[in-house]
Length: 472
Image 1 (cartoon, rainbow, N blue to C red):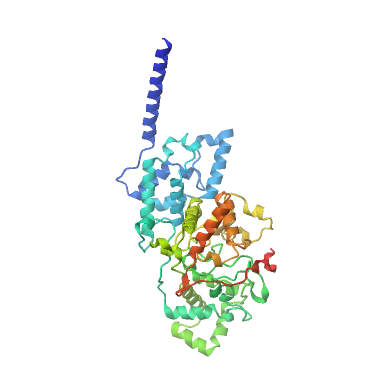
Image 2 (image 1 turned 90 degrees about the horizontal axis):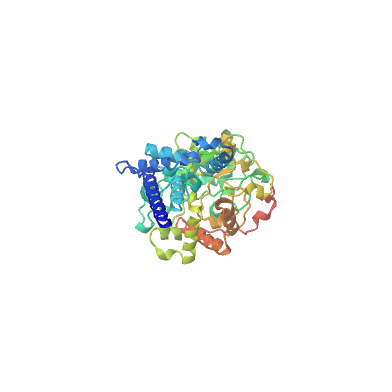
């Protein structure tokens, strides 16, 4: 056989092999049947994609996981995958047809948009795992429909599927209970020495925080964690950084008995003080005929805190279709906010409060911080004792964030710019440029809303982090 014929034969063989590979690739990357409900089509895509192999507590290990070299790579990928995201609740929700968590929705959407998963070293071995264009279209279509169905308010077509949602202008509450809750929220008699009220650490005129690194309780004792804002807390799926309170009422029951915060011996002591006030007792009985009880006190405070919403920020107006509500610089900041995965955790009306996330996902925050670890640094682990929950915290909402400094659970970042830059480093794994920091910060400032028709402000001097409560 001469050289020309050999080349032709080789070319034909290569074409045949390529065609065969395409056929096999298409066979193993079949699109789910259109007869299936959309959620089950998505379920099949992610099941075939092998996501559960790395992103779960009980991964399905491939045969080569036991091999000396490959096994180390596999186990490292599994460890980092599960550390970053547990896909099991998402898959369970898909299979049962219930609404998925908005954070899961955002994370899945971003991964598919960016073509991040599965990693090449996985789909080169597991051909059927690839997210093809057809599969991608199915997932993104489902994400859009799912997100729109999550919320009552209908947004313009161009904004309908944004991961961030506007705050509603109204909230349904019992006005009488809310009024009583307002009084209790500001009543120092909930503390042992009548010096500290809920408003001491969560003043309404300072964006629902006290702007201290750690709050000051009775006898000027310091707490161990930065006080989160009470504004828009109604949107949080749990309360406190560690999620130990399921409801606002549960949260309201905590500080009065905390020995560092309000230090009352019991609710019986609080009730006795309130009951001795004849005028207050009469007002209370008018709302709660069964009298002053712990349950009624915390219920009233919860009802009041439900009213602490801040709608009509400039960004909300943009979401509702007003293109002039934000500047090009601020819009560029929002696009970066989404590009760098911030909008995979900071979602929904409060831009957060819907999940627990690891502080230091891409780089070890606590090692770099250089301060001794505290009990509060354990985060969710304090409640569950599960090692995976160590250093995981409820994601804070970002509404009115320009006024709620200092930042993070440990209050170590004084300025919003510092917080943004370090979130890029520790959570997104990117070194943000000065321009990017400025743009994202400008976007975050569009999230300041109105309370009772007036723009939220905070005139507290920015020197509080430098006082003695900065020390661990």
